[in-house]
Length: 445
Image (cartoon, rainbow, N blue to C red):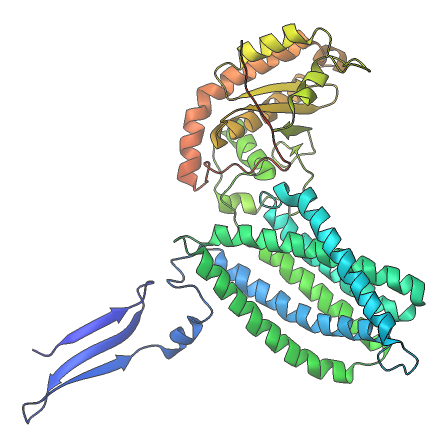
């Protein structure tokens, strides 16, 4: 019997067949048949084991991402030409030292802005990665528009304009780098994050190369201001449209504030748990930080999770203007502590201000943070349905009774909710609700 060995890749695709045979002269030979050369070419740009090694939304995201990178590369050439014209390329009276100093100013401004933006936005970039991924390209496109405006301005305003574009590019760099890292972690199913990032770089490189080649032909024919601006606006429109389609194609499996609103309001209202794909069809790309909505309605209130305890205390009673001490707050605080003694958080809903203050205890798990958010949403919705006046809702006793009954109701359904969230495909072991640097409390006594 002739020998036959089949070789497959990690995705189960047949890559080669080894066939052993005997000749009439009694000699043996082993033939190697290679299958699907096109698949091997694609493997240079796709992660090993594709499509099984990545999530289902990876393909469409990469298609749209490649199209936006192509249009961005061509638009970048037009803006670069405008910058060169602005610093005096082609002008015999231009001073190279002035151009060098302008470049140093731009670089310095951009690097300082990078440090400031990373400190200000760092915590919120991962939970809101879809929003910041699109926002990054809006910042980048705005920078290109400023670059193209620069040649038409005198030296002083031009310097300010180019410095502003450097700031926008710095903001783009911070938001794009962090949000893409979070998206890559979402796509990688086999722990292949490093390889996925490497292949993503390969895809961007080849697309940018093709875009530069196409752009080099375009810029040689586009020279007048009218045609330059027409081409630039068209390319930037395509760029933003493709970016929007890319982030809309992604179905995140973690619950940030917006996705938690959609999931928990549907569960508490109808008793059903939506899948990540169903939620992605409903969520907004841009959403206010901390807003509470009931099934895509108008904002009910806002929630502050992981904020310092003093924010919660200030909503219980006014603080002294000089000492900062809060009069009559201890007795109210003790009642709150007893109410949430079995939970890993403290919660107070400030009805007049429509703000839910959530203080997390030390070691608060992701599931406890989700429960705190769901409880805040449930309290605000019940308060709206009651139709209570602000004077009544501002009463400590009435608000405490509302929180107690809401906690009992949610706790009776929480175990079932957690189990169904896991079944639906949600990752409830990752906390994605805090968008600022959080704090934790330790209750003693």
